[in-house]
Image (cartoon, rainbow, N blue to C red; front, side):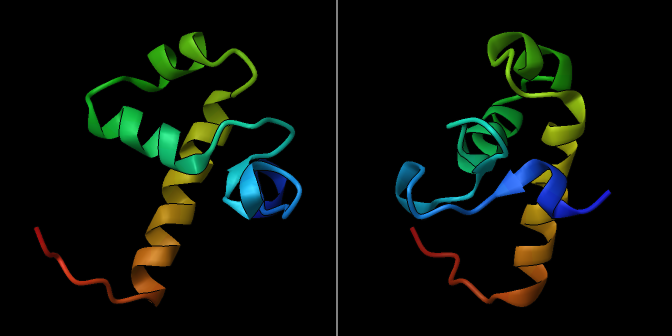
Length: 75
């Protein structure tokens, strides 16, 4: 399974921000939901157009970005 199956970057959708493919649900929404303590199942219930596999793909996508970029951990 690769990112392109579940994550899309389209300049015409959500200003080009990474989204779950075929939706307008941004990757950041999924990651924020996970960080807030929601389970994969709760996220799928809250966003029915998002599959469990897509939620897991957002984590892989975020992990890849964390490996590639350095970001300051400021306030």
